[in-house]
Length: 448
Image 1 (tube, rainbow, N blue to C red):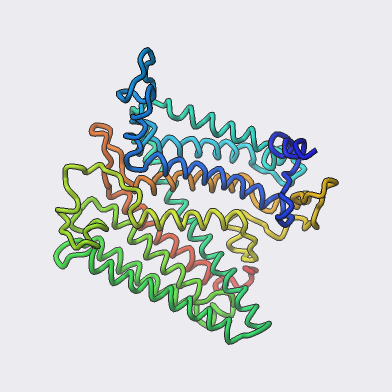
Image 2: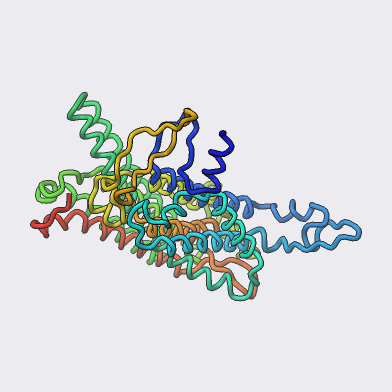
């Protein structure tokens, strides 16, 4: 009996079964989590393929890599130069982007789970996994040519958009956090909850201030690095402005949920994006490696010119970027926000779906509840587009936003990557400022 149920989950249109120890969940949440798992699985494969020494280990497998250990009578067919390193990351993320683009196109204008396409969205997981695997295998047969160079620019544009989505999700998370803790303070021990809000607000601002000091100290020179000085100073001024605006009486009257907690998180995230941008500056005098900072080694010694194309995905800003990416991906899958402005930006309508009770099958196992019969709770097409952008962001993060050089087969830092990150931080701060002042400017419109 159980085998038929699980086959229905993997190969059919019925909602998936949850294990008996899990609470009954909504179909919309489970579907987003599974698609996010596909993205995380592709990310894990990309991370493994870019690990140092991976190509050396693969060449030890008899009869596998071209130019590696051979087996008498068997010809080695696999080009291990393609399936590891930045080339493998580009191809893996290209496959994921194609997969999510396909579903984004298919799911345009799905209004409820009664639409036949919703069946494809919420079921047939085994076949969807096979489609992803098939696209991935095909991607590794793409000739080198100009593929990496062209896909780099797709990655730049997609990552720019994804950074903005990350900022929107962080704003939403901060709003939800503030709302829940303030409500708990009104219902119970107000001193404890308000102290907690104050502590985290001060902590975020303290970390942001420390970041500003360190950026000025290590990423600027008295007679050089004018761009870095401008980046740090401009973002610092903008963060001060949004923090002051968030507590103005008129803003508080129009948007009681706004406050310094949200501004502190946005400020800290902005400082991270600023730091991330400056690590892509090809001028090594203004961009010391983390190794040289920790070991107090000179820039020349830490970054030898003999290996300009070496990609080290495990540097600090890449790891922080991955952590933020994982958090935002998980949060986007489970979020249930009451913030109308963020819901409009993220194309979600969390209050629209039907709220169902716990559904238990005849076999005693809990089933996911179809809460979208009257209307979808999120835009299917936009959700897949968001995962498409996430695929491109992961590609750029794992390769440190370096640009492939077709002639030398190396990876090089470029100023366009710097300006893309900085401009995304400016646009993100402007977007957050707009969410604060819009309710004050347009008094007759309901922003709640």
